[in-house]
Length: 90
Image (cartoon, rainbow, N blue to C red; front, side, top):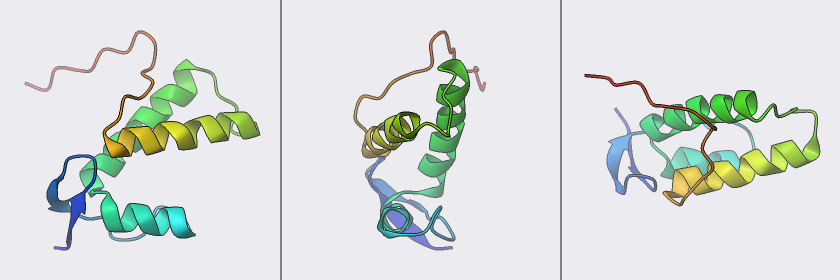
């Protein structure tokens, strides 16, 4: 199993098996983001799209998600979906 020093969690975690999309941004994610952080981002991205009614055909909506992805994966403050309460996984 390949690991990566995850920039979100600042520790070695299992890596993605391939870049999530082509180009330099995808390669950067492959080399610096764990599978766990990426999976968490994709769930959060879905919540943002649904709760904020984002139209992915809209360039501004896509720019917003890129900015939020950068913040989320870097461990910075990021926008939350209004009214979202994480499920208790106990």
